[in-house]
Image 1: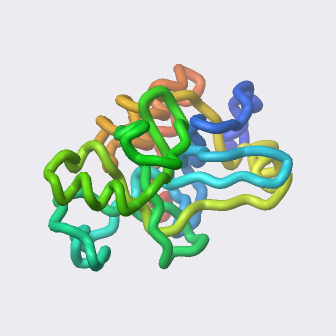
Image 2: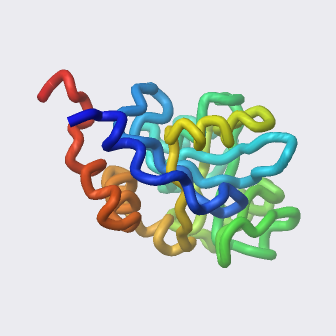
Length: 195
């Protein structure tokens, strides 16, 4: 069976945009983006950026983030751009000044000192804040070009689906929700050479 025919199921019917997910096609052979789930934070004529949602780092939060109170939260690899910078997603809403709502109940950024203070006071649970090292970025029209090549499929999500899905199963669970046309994607081995 021709792999190209399996991957070209149908053109992306859903346009990329803030709060949408990008699911990589199963044969994307890329250290960063293979079987990745990317939440788009912004998509406009100037380009696109988002965070990889399903690639946790092995180090503990306080081993990575200095000058912060003890916190049991997970740190994720957000993407290859500015990997030394930290970004946050949270459900704290207006408690964190300067944040932007990406999905209903899910916010990007804001005053990190407020987050630190709320953690110190014990007002933040690990499932309410996620920290990301780096981000994923695309130049103007680059993402649209990758969508035309079927490198990604765009889908919708909710904050609870995104935050409650285990990272190890995230790609396959979101692919399963795409419908029967994508059923084969979950059957492809991660490394076809090992099959």
